[in-house]
Length: 97
Image (cartoon, rainbow, N blue to C red; front, side, top):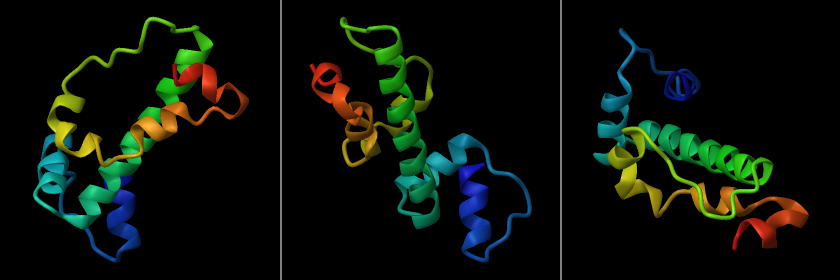
């Protein structure tokens, strides 16, 4: 959905909906629209994971399951995932431990 919105905002159109794997591959190959969509996804994921960590008092860590992050791993270090995970206002010092 993020990718489709970015395409429409850039004035481009899709003949068919690409798969998540195709979007990830395009992002890793340097497609700027796909990369923006993936970076936004990782930011949202980081925010949500941080919220869940606070909600459940996850002091032992947070683990991500599934097959999405391994495919996107080369992009994670440059993404806002960790920054958004830690950005919890007055709870930032607690969550970043």
